[in-house]
Length: 201
Image 1 (cartoon, rainbow, N blue to C red):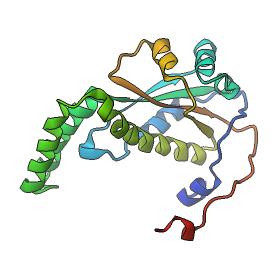
Image 2: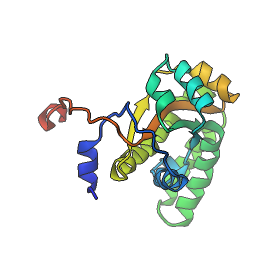
Image 3: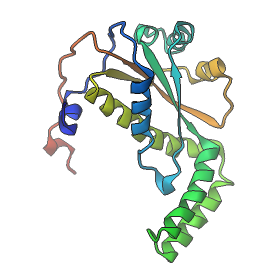
Image 4: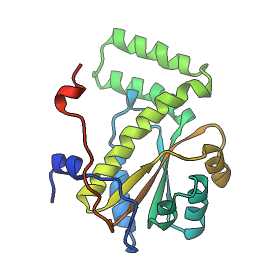
């Protein structure tokens, strides 16, 4: 089994999959890794919808400008954030951190002031913050998938309005991305990455 750095280095965006099913046990394993992702005040706003049926995958493909690998992947995970739960989770998370003596009183007061203010913030202004949290959890899934010999592909080129219509979601659920999953039926070549020197400011 690969170590974590090998998973990071060998990960590729996979768009061709074998027809083999992914067991519920493996999907549970992936989501179990996602739920351990970090989030501000332990808010944990990520929510996932697991799609296996062909009809819904076809609708998701159409909503994604007909990217065919979405319809062909054994599993598609619709990755979202719950705005209300983010606010509630932030408030309860502050209390938990304070009660566990993980933050001092002054920092707790600052966090409480900030999170109390979230109640009055418009949903649109929380979208980027919640999406950032969800993305961390999704990457946990991606790397664990590599370790389990699964392939995945982030899909962000999507008509979000159509996604919301498919599942009849209100504004509280923020779509972040689709993640296709399956056993790879291709070995994409590595692409050039910036050097360490290039990414240091």
